[in-house]
Image 1 (cartoon, rainbow, N blue to C red):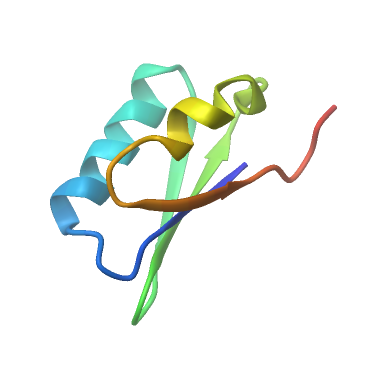
Image 2 (spheres, one colour):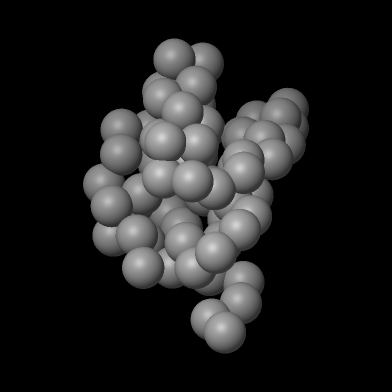
Length: 68
């Protein structure tokens, strides 16, 4: 799963998303771009929490990569 942050997301909002990923037992892999940040979420089946991650402040959208 990939969490795509809004271009206006603050560093604190991104850190909160990373912390939330970790607190749910997944491994975050943030990729900091010039205009946006994306957080790859690895482990288990994070898709079950898709709507939870979509509702976090600063998140633009969430994309599932593998639904297996």
